[in-house]
Image 1 (cartoon, rainbow, N blue to C red):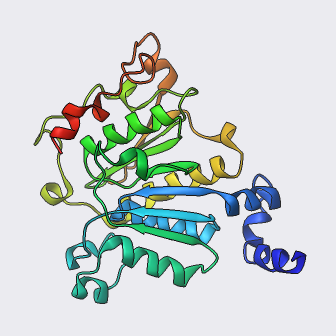
Image 2 (cartoon, rainbow, N blue to C red; image 1 turned 90 degrees about the vertical axis):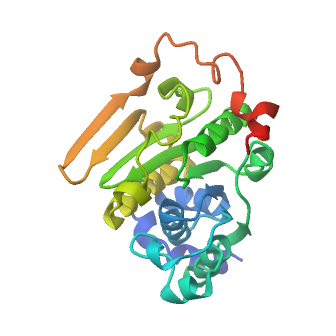
Length: 269
C-alpha cells in the first residue's frame, strides 16, 4: 500500500516540490471533494486543471450539450463531441477519466435551481462557479452560505473577467457585493459581445489556484479581494471585500435570509 501511495504521489512530484503545497497538501487534495457547477468555458477548464492537480472527487453539473461554437473557449471538448451533440457533463467526465484515472468523477445532467441546489452541493468541500448567469449564482450563494460551504464565484465576458472567494463566516458573500441579480438584458452576454478563449482560461486558472490553496489546507493564503481583469487593456483591479462590505447588514450572510431558495424563487424556475 505504501508503494502504491508513493507511486501515485510521484505523478505530482512537480507540485509537491512546491513548498507551500508539499506532500501533505497533495494528500489533502486527493481526499477533497469538489462540485463544479456548469461545464462550459469556465467549468470545463476547472475540470481539466483540478483533475490534473489530483483532486480526489469531482461532481460535474450541467444540462447543456457541446456545440461547435463552444470549442474556441471550452478546451476540454472536441469536434467529435460537438458533432455528436454530447452532453457536457458526460463528455467532460469521460475526458477527465482519460486525463487522470485516479480522480472519481460524477457527472450530473441537471440545471441548478432553488429546488435542487442543496442536493447538488451536498457532501462537497468546495463549490466552483462555472455558470453563465446571475440568478444561478445568487441561488448558489444562498445555498453555500446556508450550508457554510465555501465557493468561488467567477464570470467572464468579452476580454474581461472577475472572481472572488466566498468563505461563509469568514468573508463577505456575493450579496454583500451585488445586492441582487441585474435585470434581464442589463448585463452583456458572450453571445452578444463575444468572449476570447484566453480570458476564460486565465480566470479559471485563478479559480483553480485558489481552490488548491483551500483544499490543501492553506486557506489563509486565499485572496480576500474581488479581482477584475481587463485583458485587452492589461488592467487589474482589486477591491477589498471586507472594507466594501463594512457596515452592511447583508440579508443573506448577516440576517440569514435565503431569498433565492424561497418558494417564490422556485416558482420562477
